[in-house]
Length: 436
Image (cartoon, rainbow, N blue to C red):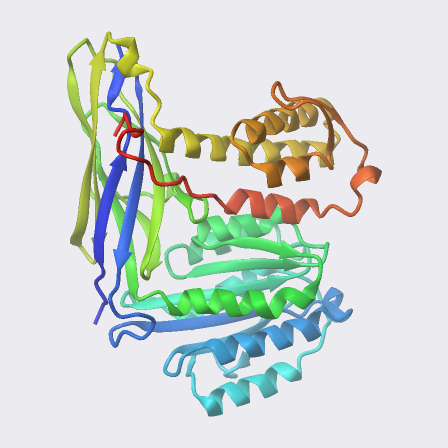
């Protein structure tokens, strides 16, 4: 039995385009109510925890990872299927001892903890190999919610980028995965690829003492998922092209290249499993230019599960010569456009700095400072002020600091957080939402 949630959809946009305008933006808010809390009878869940056991985990991080895994096991509800995988330059089953899962109970949790306690740190890092084993363990049951946690402290150095990409592609659509980095040896790009492809989150921490709380939170969120295989189904008219479709809240996930064609004009975009929650998506559609008074149905967006429609919303356009109408900016569209631009500017700027391209780093980080100032992101502005000397925050005039000035700043952790975490746009009053 597949749990089917009650779903609503709202569309925020300014439907008016100037004559010659070709891009329509809309924010799609989807809210689901599962009605069954965290224990609906129809929700079958499987969980895999992948523990990095490479040699660099030996300085206390593996001890913390073992404890965090124990907390995660205690958080699993009875009846959930689970497995533990150890990863180095290879991957192997910790519990059970053959590829597959066991049902969570007091006895299986205790047995799993005993096996985890015997793990030792030795070897390298090949995350794609770990993920492929997790995929085998979890199988491909469309009615089951399949989730994994990947923990690492190292760079993915024992497989080629092509091998890693191929492994990710093979796992896509089979399960979701939250990836975590601990210490300073891991790379944000690796974990963000896992999060982006497998519809999860990426984050990092210098101190492994926080792993237990983080693992518990991840599992609690996973246990709240009750509806599997939910997708956004988007229809567009002839001549239109989807520039992008991104989930913007509660985390950023670019779905643009994840489209599965239903027909030439209809495609499904996976959203993973749902519980009682709300998510927001940014859709941008490129159109042929219209004449004054022309109207067009730009997109029909549906939430579907196993072919059944759960909710629907429409994105519309009308071309006008009235500048007051066409220049009104919908606040939700403006908010999420700014969020996306800010994350990209920071990621590109910090990456350029690490690569030694100081001119590009200065330009990108200056742009990020201006965006953070405009959008009131004080937390981000404070982080940026440790990387650059801010001359004028409004214009984004900055001077790049040396690495020594911020040697305690965990760049990869900051990139991961800023590239996956989003702040939600506050609900709009009726009289403020002019473009809706």
